[in-house]
Image (cartoon, rainbow, N blue to C red; front, side, top):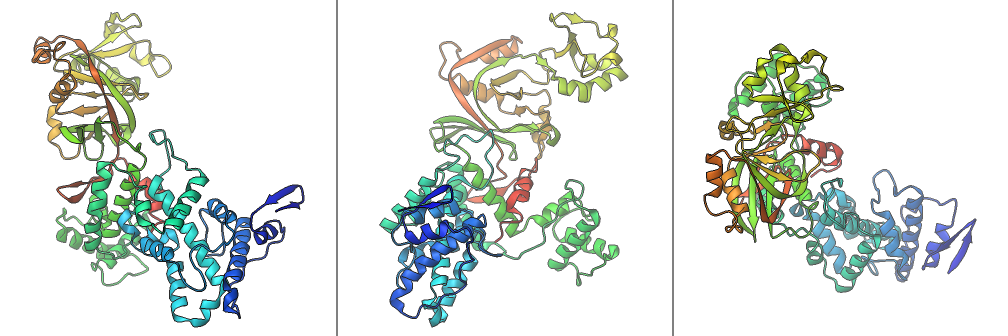
Length: 562
């Protein structure tokens, strides 16, 4: 059926949808419509579904102050292809599929999801109303609203399970980072016709080892989780938050924890300091009465905030390709850890040092192509201007102390004493600073190369004592590897004819520079995971680059709630 609407043509299968979609003055749908003849409930429900879709379309998905259809385009597409609009009920009865979706949403925390994102409170209220009020069973407007809420919830669940809720970026490798509308409609059709919901939704989840381990451990975490809702604290020296606001939130949080007997509108600094000391003493922190970063981190380490951390990390796995390579090197920045996987077997594990927060190690995907023994370090200009030039101006002997030489564009060594260092700046610096190879070199005795636009790489270090530190965000952006020797041997294990055993050790002992090209290139993933499973339990790592905090500010902290 086709009808002219001004200059446009509307084509919709169901006549009532057609009429409403072409009305320029669409009225809000009915709050309630009690049908006198029970046999007409289905027909009136369809009419109310059509009216609600038409109105919500005019309001960019908003039905009222409490209901927003987030997936309205695909919801409309689903209903446009149906002769009978009702999907989740029939003749005042829920279909089994509606029960399945309701219980899936209620248990959606097990998937790192939040029931509130899928209209759970509205659906729960509607189901309760229909169960307790016999007249509501004949309310076609209520059945219609429920049908649309279920459909919108299903589409949102599919999107969140398949793609997650984090924005895509240059690191994301998924080819299907945007799903076609037809994907959602086709999947709902398959679920509707088969009556099978949960297995089809679970089939959308990532199959990565880390994701599956985290999902499995999540159930135990939820079973023992303290669900008390606490005030979240943003530390004033790292977040754009007023210090008075921070102190008020701190006072509220300590009151919630039982460390203050009253939450006064005015801040009593003496009582607040005493409460902080009491909290520090109970939680094994330095007792000084100061609410510094460690106190804030501890106060925020409650059940609901940790669940959000788990949810964020589950979504990070959804940004990976569906199938990982058979062999790959995995760097987890917050864990300060490198792992090499080969056919689902952990072949190598090493402590690492990563970039400082102000000189972050970038997230990227690449391939290890070669490594160099006894490398020479060419100092990046960013380090020269930020750190070295002021020290050189103060004392040129700094160059000799750091084993640095100055070379011109022809790679000729220049006497640093002949250079007026005060005339050099970002706009004029016709030299390079290079560090001679050897034990004093910042790259150590080996450098592993992979293509990337950030000029970072894996390497050994001349400061190997730093690997003993628990927090190792210390570099300028490159990744320092404690087990560099094991990694180099693994890379050439298939090239024994070219590189017999002990060849690398002999080169290093003789301080010989060689570039080693190995036959089997190794994919490398530099990623940011702030929790993972070890020995069946979820462990959490510091949010060293505040990536979790950014994710919370973009949705997980405010929109999502338990």
